[in-house]
Image (cartoon, rainbow, N blue to C red; front, top):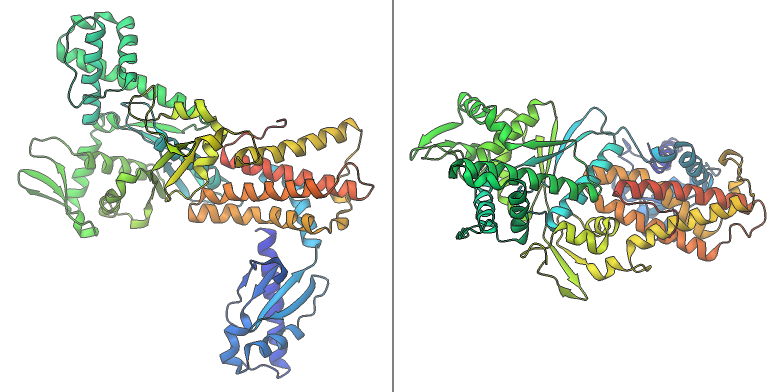
Length: 558
């Protein structure tokens, strides 16, 4: 439980005691006490917490809310915990806490280190997070990169909140797109070999296909001697293997490692599609019509039933996806979270229908839909890529702005929001660039602590530090922001909001820079020097923690 939550619970208990005392004295009359709500006011001059309990109970106690509030306040007696209590507006009660709880925040941070902010909120829940899952027919683009940043950061946040998390990349290596890719690669291979060959109309025109064909020709010119069908299959599998390794390398450079890469081909080899169809048939959700096999997905809210086996006997992609999700569930995961691209919104209903038809609850599967990314350079939209020919690749992006800026900019907005990615700003080494600004705060702290070491200043243990002298407004604001981290992680995990952590990191960095500009540290006399050194050590721990959650480096020098 966070220290902020503990303060709210303590305040709620004080309010409850005050109400009971007011009832005993005959000043208020009511049957029962409703749930006591406490919120952090938007304006800090309104206190640390505020309650509307007097407004909520006004009609029960039959007194004006402000009068009821004043009676409640008169029965709140803990003045060591509270600096003051005020009645505001129509009857809100504003609570101003003393600073001791904030000093406890600093002690908690330094005692827990990188574990600060973690919780066991979701302990015992086994979650499988699948994201990116780009087709293995080309380099990954910026939408894939956004999915990678969001998915990986969510996994880190989920782990901090107590989930048993596994991450997975689904390799669509059995669909028709791989056959188109194989024919494209074969055509370029033959052209490299000097054989006149027409390129498929639906082929992949990117320069990467030609580059792959040149590698394949140098490695294996003997493919020309194979029968056409055999040659095409060899090229298809070789090309897929190359693309998967390229994608794996790009993701590793982006700081993203998956626990498992799951091949769609394995489902076909293990006859998983036939098995899941037999199960659906056994449960009464399969029917035949128009020479095809259908799934009764409308029974679970889908807008129409879905074909599983076409009239030519081939499976649709829906069938493989049902088999894949059933495989996930059979592995014991209690929650499946998929991150899909913006063109997959209409696919959610049919997969949720399949989950229910297999005997699981609808909310077992959750889907986040990412919106499109627009790249801007000097205010103009970027449309083309030199390497790929028709889209900007993840590698292009990393080459231009680097891993840290790319991750942060993808995480700045909610996953459901369209993102304008400013390449010019992301490349700048200035305070206008938010990721630079955050990392600079961390580097500044490291610099101060190095100077302290060089000056042979021994920093006392947090438990002996004279923290009571931390009374400046900016110091209080900084400690309150540090106290917020556990709740920020909890809310980010509950609501699937990685952008909360990105915003928190920026807010914390901004407060630290303000502190740095207004408060001396090493130049101060004791005991202020020791208290501020312990304060910035706590900020260092939390900045390191949030940067790690975001998958961004914490540089000690800049």
